[in-house]
Image (cartoon, rainbow, N blue to C red):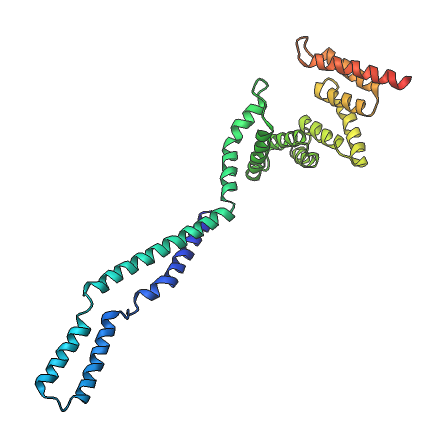
Length: 288
């Protein structure tokens, strides 16, 4: 950004020099100069035409000519004109610079760069809010800002597995399963045994419409259930996946196991109970 502004400034100064400096040293053909030229020409004509006139009359004609041609313009006029010309040059330079700066700001990405810098500064605060269960939920605009801030952070720290996992979660919330899959895959590569990365990658595959991704997701989900059968997050994902595939028995069993693992005052219990009731109704409807 600084380099671009410096280049623009150099170009503006060069343009101003090319437009105005060549005119500053040119001799101005003003009224005084013209009068001097006419005066000399008339003197030469008088020398040629008035040779027969006596010296007194000839001197009188020269005096009249000098009076008419050399004294009709004040001496200060040229100076005033020069001063006014300099102001015209200065005003022209200001106009050119103003137009160029205006066009640059209008057509450049300066506004977006400023917004991006603000997002980067807000990223730590947004990360704290999203990780705080008691914090105020982020709006959709703040989620987009946090995703942009995380991508910027990951360019500087590409080995930050936690940031890759968080970015994947954000992309799922923002309904970008492709971007989420890439983020979770990067997190898995950095930490192959990390349960959060594996779970996020599996969830992203479940959102895919590719049959191959669905089969891979089912295999990964079975492995997660085998290794983490008491993990509420894994059970929740397995239950909703079974419900989507109309495997109501598996869904109900997973939700019931979650009820056993969750504390009695957990807010999720009410949602799980409603989900179980819905699954039972759907199951009864298919049996009729």
